[in-house]
Image (cartoon, rainbow, N blue to C red; front, side, top):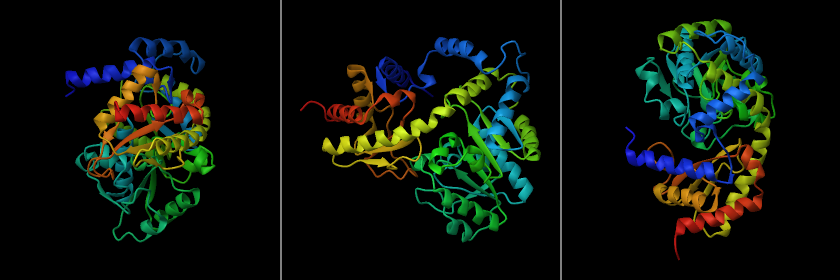
Length: 387
């Protein structure tokens, strides 16, 4: 339950972020209802015929989006889902039925393990095992030598809660090959697959071709309203559509989400490589700024970033860092950091350390390294308070 105090804190943050003249990323949820609806109505005709009929249980613009994503990923078919959580759970359930093995190998920091309330077991009867607990995806030998059988290997690309980390292309192909040697299928949690191409130096279709199936999200990197797509063999996708209905995901109409996803593919997807490149500049300048400010300990993870997102760790309480972040935005018009979170079981954060996720998007391209270092200097002053 969200308390009134939490609502007020959120309203304060949103007001400060929206009013900032400088920020590393501007995201849709920071806008008002009116702003988002007006923008969608104005922009939608650029990606789909506004005279087309609205979708009813699929079809229309939803089918258009499914075809577009299947083509981008080089997959036979794709199905739109209201959430990525549902899409991925159904994919793993379908593969368990096909392989005859309900065990899924994944990382303990992966989304199903940390953010879905044990749904793989509680809802789908699946069991999970962990080839590694290191803050990276498993390696080929760890998969090859894992002592228990499993039917599916799920790889989250990038592994968000380890710092949006990715393996090298050679490591990724080797781990997929190791899974194949064990007769396991490979599923990619590609919620943020869109920004992985620069790191691998490969097209999205070549990356996706390594897997038997992949799911992608539309709101995390493409600034869509919501929704996800599961792509893979046509027989798997058709089975997933059946389970989508059983799980309550066969929505009557989804055209706003589908239109916003198409807009993201048209506008944000081509710009992601520039965001990824500039994130390296920002991360390096952050590290330089903290060192120059005499912060006793910090971590930029990974350095350099693998995508346009990365983590920053600082040895202060989350409440202290949240207050410093919002005051800097309110009083200087500069939003350097947004939310901070204290460590908890399974996060790998040392006691007394808090973490934030930094995203570099279109607005962040305006920042020079010196701008970042100046902002860090000001932020640290807010953290330390009056001399």
